[in-house]
Image 1 (tube, rainbow, N blue to C red):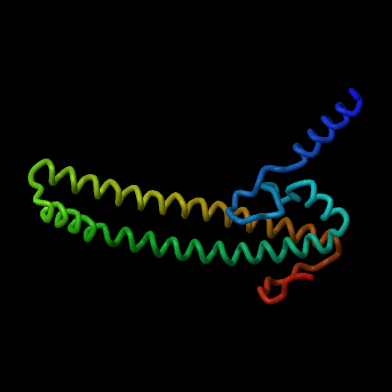
Image 2: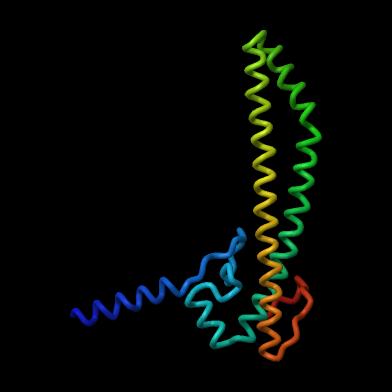
Amino acid sequence: MKKVLTILTICSATVLTACGEPAPAAWNANLDISCKPHDPYDKLYASLSPEKFWREQEYDMGTMDKAGRKNIEMSKMVLDDSRAQKGDYFQRAQQAARDLGLTGSAKRNHVKENMDRYNQEVKDIEMRLKQQETALNWVRKCKNAVDTELRKLGLQPVKYDPEKRPM
């Protein structure tokens, strides 16, 4: 019985340590932060069917790259629009304070609270944009690693085509 528990403990520890640190991307990836197969299943799949595994990763990295670039483009537009609307937001906060009948320090506090909220929203957008850029850099790094793995297998990398998912 003690021998069985020891073997189970060793197997559990091996399986748990076999997983690399997850990718920094918000997407579900089969590659870890080092662009290696992420978990025991991915490692097994990569060793049993390397061509299929790496072709799938090539397609996934293409999909993530395209989505990441689009997300960054849209986030930059939202950030630019938000920054451009700061004056309007300030005027609306002042008008809301007047509409509420606030004067003096109550009015200033109301406007300040609204502007603090506005500034926090802009900071949140900036933070998400940085996270998206970090994730996109990881995708680009992994695209290069996937291309290297494909070349090791004697395969040429294929340009991403969303219509041609590997079978």
